[in-house]
Amino acid sequence: MSTTIAGETYYTLQEVADGVGVHYQTVRTWINEGTLNASKIGKSYRVPEAELKRLLSSHKADAKVEVA
Image (cartoon, rainbow, N blue to C red; front, side, top):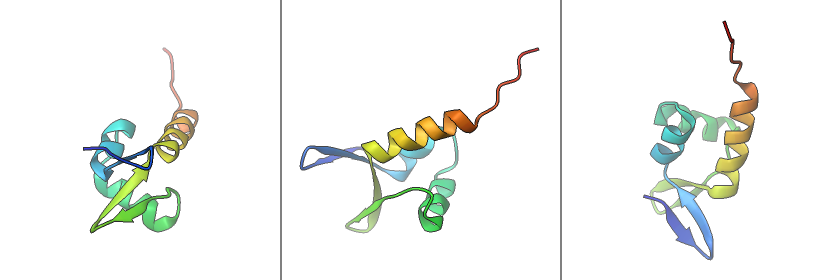
């Protein structure tokens, strides 16, 4: 469930994973590698909406679609 703090929306790792189409553990790896910025809120990581949008735009740019 997304959370709004000070007007900014933050998403769980599972929400990010679902949005990008990867396993949540992949999202955790991206955070550990520094590929994805996240904040630790309590015991859980949350990804700000702006960072999710950046990830989605770069993920789409990296995807290659072949048309037969």
